[in-house]
Length: 298
Image 1: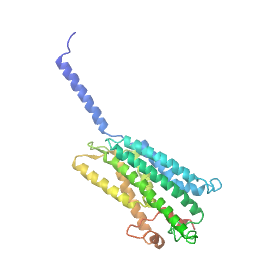
Image 2 (image 1 turned 90 degrees about the vertical axis):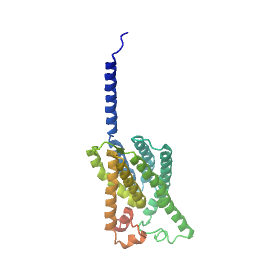
Image 3 (image 1 turned 180 degrees about the vertical axis):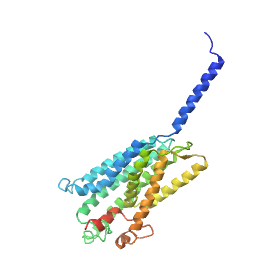
Image 4 (image 1 turned 30 degrees about the vertical axis):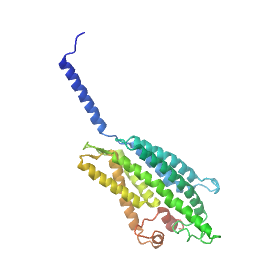
């Protein structure tokens, strides 16, 4: 059997190495996850933002007060679909992320969102009975005269589970997963840009995050996450890495959202009623409190 000439073998090896290098370079040019980001936006707008709207529009006869409402079913779907999308997003990360941290975040997220599901369901029924969101629990006309007075403590506990514990266990792991994914969105390909589909999705995505931050009362969490992202970008730049298209999408999202929140706060800065409900240095009114105060009555 005739041996292959050494020069031919070297040429073949060189071509194979060059081919592998080309494949590696193409892989470094990460793909923009248009399908995932679009799924996030659609389900966020329908199942989260649209949830209270659907409860207002749907006839009360279809969903009696002693049965789950259409908003409850929306929330149940959100609690299943969002963790699935987060896991799919983590799977698409260019770098391996700590699995234990991801799984723990997903478990905590589901538990917090489920706590919020119960509290928000009862809260909606209270609204139909005359509960006013721009007032505190004890100041509400349908609550303050309850007998015995210990019932008011029970409603305050419900408010705590809904607005504080539920939101914390829901949003902290959510933003932590987004940040973990963001840490892997860096590349050495300098000319990688966000596609047109990303720019089209940026607007509705940022508006939803404005709603999430204001209605969820998580401005502090958002700011800490944003600062962590900025610090990560600065550190990676010193090492010669830049954001890929997906990282840019997330980063631009946070920047635009910050601008929207600042405009919202400036618009309601002198509202005395909302100022009373949201005292302290950090003043970020909830959109639905604004609705019950200024829109619903008119």
